[in-house]
Length: 180
Length: 314
Image (cartoon, rainbow over all chains, first blue to last red):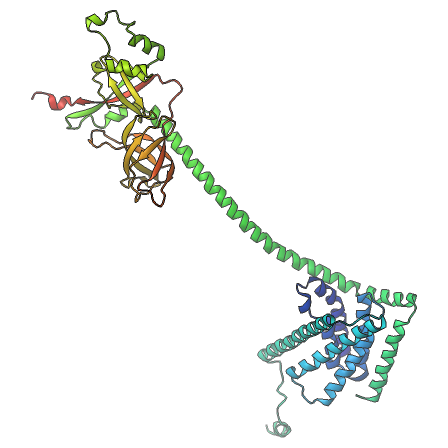
């Protein structure tokens, strides 16, 4: 279980250091993925319960520190997004790659919208449609990147024979144990 | 979602709200700590970004190198054209200084009745020519029948060049005037002892000419023949080249002897300008003849003489 925390910690750290480079070198700002969103999805997929929430909050704090704005907006946004993701996964029994896509999109969008709206409300700024459009485009790009990466890794794993066939029925397992 | 997770979420939200209202010192300390923790990773990312940018910059350098190569190729082609023109000029100078014996050496044992022969003549200076025409240089006067041809005298009045050979040297009208192996004019009027010559650049000069292109495989003649006409200026005009002929700048212009007497075509000059308009019936070709030295002292006259072998009594 500790290795999961280690991997998630690496994802969180990597997302925080990669995002400034991605945002600087992106040619089209509307197609720039938001890397911390991918780290949020990883936290929600690999960890459950309080662990996922805590890592999400840490991720949000890191984004707050990098953004240069007042602390707290992204902590709250990431926490709420993680809660939403856990609620959606808890209600849905689907575990396929494509089923994670909508969950990821919703979680990332919730994070960005909550943090943006909170900031604009607190600072008495207007939430423009352009901001929302930019958020949606970034979230879409991030979701596409995440799903594409997962699919690619799954295909590679299948090609290399690393995926264990989990569809074997229980009865067959008894047969495998008893038969010589 | 468990109760524990719900309480954790509420606690984290409160922490976030608390961070917003935290004093500036505390917020700055937290921000500094987080930035210090991320500094090594940011430094690594910076190095990786610079490395990637250098690789892409190398690709753009390759494209710049390609543009430089294209530009240098164009410059090389221009220099090659210039080099070719200089080679032609050098060939002209060499031809001009070649001994005249080379012209007749190859036909000394032919069976032809009339053989071309060269005679070296002196170009008389203006002062000497004027005194000659005025009769001051002849001890015997006109009453003795020793007077130069009237045509020669008349043409001399128009300042035509005078040579010291006439009928006495078996000079004939239209005999080519050579400088080395290059044609620089022809005999206009033949007198008893002197003759006037017409240079290629003179306004009334006419001569049959043909275009020959010098290629890496040798000389190529595609049948383009015309009339080389002097214009009274430095360039001559080659007329009568049909539009279906191929004419290029730096093509060589040689004599086209219809009578077949000349052993080899003789060099006039080279093409410096050639245009063919959409409605033109012939090419407009300008030829730069062989340049003459500042002081023309001696020239050769290509004359026709009977073959002594054919006239010998057996």
